[in-house]
Length: 243
Image (cartoon, rainbow, N blue to C red; front, side, top):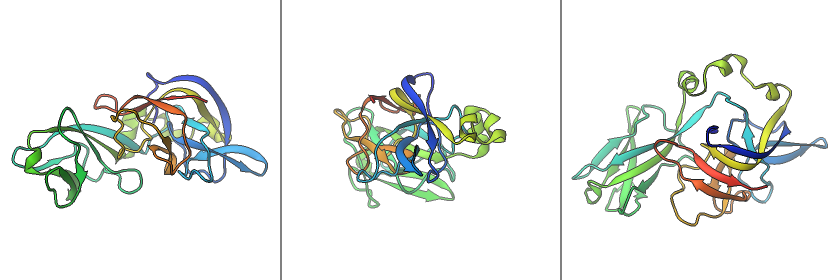
C-alpha cells in the first residue's frame, strides 16, 4: 500500500505484467522480466543473482491484503506480557514478517528468545491473541513494535473504500499492464518489519520475496535512501528512489 499524501512521483511508466507474477498491490517492489520477447514486471523474488529492480507498483487504491502496524508498548514493571493491538488471528507469520522492537529512547534493543532473559522478549499466541513477553529487567521501558497483520475484506474496505471489492482489478490491470514508479519519494508499507529502519546510516536497501523491501545483499539492490522510518501515526517506510 502506498501513502499518496506523502508520495511524490518524479518518473513513471507502464509495464506489462509478466505471466509469472503473483497478485500485485500498491507499493510492491517489482523485478524486470522477459517472456516471449516482451519485457514486463513481476513481484520481486529477493534473489540478487537472477533479478534486478524495476520500480514500485502503483495500482491506485487496490484492495490491500495486509497492513503494517506500529504500536507503542511499555513493558510491565516486574515483567509480563502485553497484547498487540490488532489481534486475534491477524499477525502475519513466515517470510518477511517478524516483529521488530525499537526503544523509544535510551533502553537497549531486545532480541527474540523464548527464555525471555534480560534484554530479550518472546512472542506467544493464546486463543488467537498474540502477546509480547518481557523480562523484569525491561520493566517500564517503552518500545515501538512493528509488525504486519492480515486484513479481512471489511477491514481493507475501511482503508481504501469499497470500489475495488466489486471491480476486482484496476483498468490498467484489465489490459495486463501496471503503472511503475521509477524514481521519486515513495511511502510504502511493503517493507520487512523485522528490520530496524530507525538505525542510522541505513544502506543496502534491496528487494525481498513477495514484493517486499528489506536490507542486505540477498535481493536485488535498490538505489534508495531512507527518508522516514515507519511510526505509529504513519506506518509507512519513506524512500527516495533514484532511477
